[in-house]
Image (cartoon, rainbow, N blue to C red; front, side, top):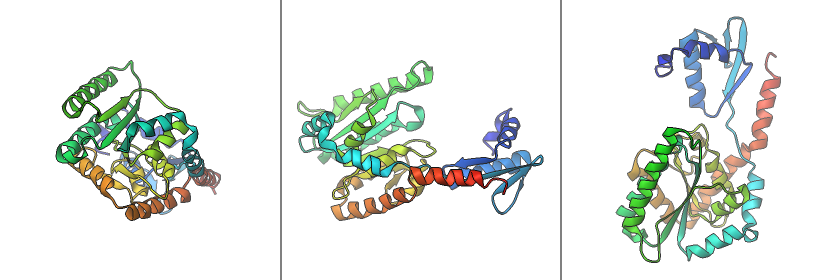
Length: 297
């Protein structure tokens, strides 16, 4: 509330939100912050069942963390042999471990911070030089906005510095691609990877984190390194959870994932997959629609 109250339109924004019958949030922290803002900003009445009352209207707010279609992702990723791109990627690795990130080129995704963390990993673990490859897929986003152009320049500078410092005649540390891929191809890339990076600086959920887990081979799964500031971290507690602003912590998280024994990876992946199946995309919309039908009852 202390951050929101500096906006001159704060009260009007909150009043508009009271016009809804149902509002869903990704995490309990988000819901708690919303209720706090409504109570402090509008003096709404809040009862024990989560309903808010203001100006004769009743609003219900609850947590509905969005899921993914686990079975569809797993089936698509398992069909890796049919994807030319996936086969080309596997051949190009020559047995090296793959680290992957896939995001929009957006300030909230923390791509510059992620690159600095990868640089820190290579500095503190020189034994990984030549043995790992980091593939960052960044789909262009709002290219006409100045702030995004500045992010791109920063990313380009970091890429140049890391590549120039660590590359060898037969290896480059980073493969950076500014183009989107079809969903099935991306899922096959996830299945190949040993580490999935979802280290957003702020994210309501981050479905890439969930997709990475769903795409893994349960017999030899890769590990997810996820930001503590993404909603997915609240559910995927068996992932490696890191502070995206701390390059040493992210580097240590990647190292932990690379060195994690197979049995531990299997156990963690099994636990995360159970969470995803319990709250998949179908369960999410059923819960939301049921809550909407119950409004006013």
